[in-house]
Length: 307
Length: 307
Image 1 (spheres, rainbow over the protein chains, first blue to last red):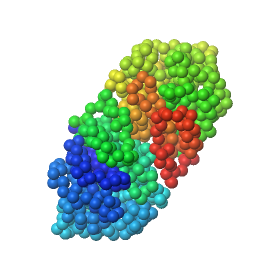
Image 2 (cartoon, chains in turn green, purple):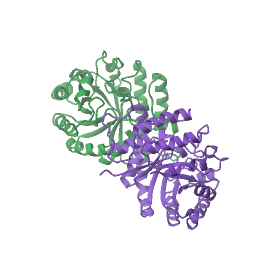
Image 3 (cartoon, chains in turn yellow, orange):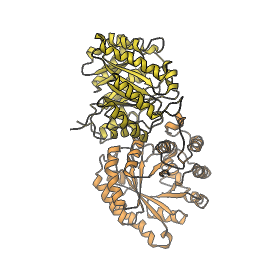
Image 4 (cartoon, rainbow over the protein chains, first blue to last red):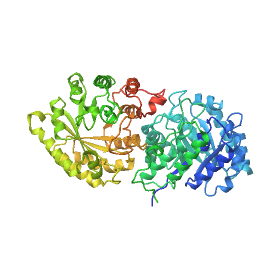
């Protein structure tokens, strides 16, 4: 029985937050359903950030309307603050991802809050679990810039662990360790992830890698060795952070699925179906930055999905 | 004291063997000297293949004339057969790389010989060690398609080990395990490399990975874990095999050096100098396929070469 690895598709959130134009809600719906049909079982669907900050997500509540139809899929949403969390819950999203930056400089640039202020906001969001609206909420916490920051430079791993401990003890159900700007390397993954897994104490640990400097899949392979079995990735490698210069490109879902399946892990993903969806997404979005080796070179003749 | 990892630059051989136009010998000389100045200590300089097969290497003997000036650099050449080996030795190259394909289909397409016929040719080349001309020869043997083949599909690891044993006992000084077509993955690296290292019995083992399907650096990271400390790579990720469809792209020297240095290994490579050379090589070669994340995204603010 092959071991399962989960790819959480973030193309509809991280992938399009910087896209040049608004993608129609119907396209987003189609995108999500076709991800489901291609075997993706976790999808970050949108972000409950104010439309005046990121106009792409003006339709967050409308898009959340498809959640009941996305059977078999865990649909999550990014929430930047308490208000976003309340809106997401009201729209029917049960799985929220709150991101805070370990780097003070990135935190201030990204959300105009210090890391400690973001932690305070997290406490307010976690408190929703004590209210009827948030009782069945699953709360993931992204630890952005855990591997370094384009603004601040080095990030102290001890600060990553400290923040992880705080949020784990205060209601985080999942820890998402993020290399927001593509500074991480496999040796660093081996240093940072084991303590995080200890701190998580049974909570799921998810890695969120960007391929900015080409090490995305090497970092995935290293994280697998530490025991991580869930990764964020985006179709066609779309994505980037508006407040982290040069931070283009989540790891590519097709390529990551290919690597995992080749290594004998089961992802449940139909790579051919993803490549078809990718072609349509490219036609919808137009001139964005797309990555991906499998889209260019094709699957090997020897490729067999793991049962 | 940081551990050393060697990158053998193959851009001047694997990188340009399919280039659309002949690169002037003076450019190749400049390229080689600037690699030396950027800290590369091993360069595959050319191929002693007949000019009617690959016109790019018509100047092999002339280019070999710079070897005495490339102080501190091990300059090697590819030799396709006994005649090529004799020519390389006559031109002053002491370090020869002979490649044979584990895949019969690839061997027949590439050199119109079965694998066993190629092994017989290897015996004839190794016999040069008993002659004055070849007495100080260092003989590397490339095991092409060790991870699979675009023509044949799967390649039996037992056959890789069998051929490795034969050449190791018959005069190979180095074993170069090659993923000629970019089929390999980190799990496969962990399966194939340890037996090869055993068979090598102290001889150097070099990995030659292509990044065709995006797993090149993940495979390097896996090979590092098995103890491999030498890799073939090419500036700007140039390269490909004329008889292996879709086999574009050696692993990129700049990106590989970045990963290794970030992980705490010493490569001796000045990545900035390599990026300058890359810009000139692009202007010389024109419309080829270039890859590389560092050339696009730049080095991280936190980057420090290992002393």
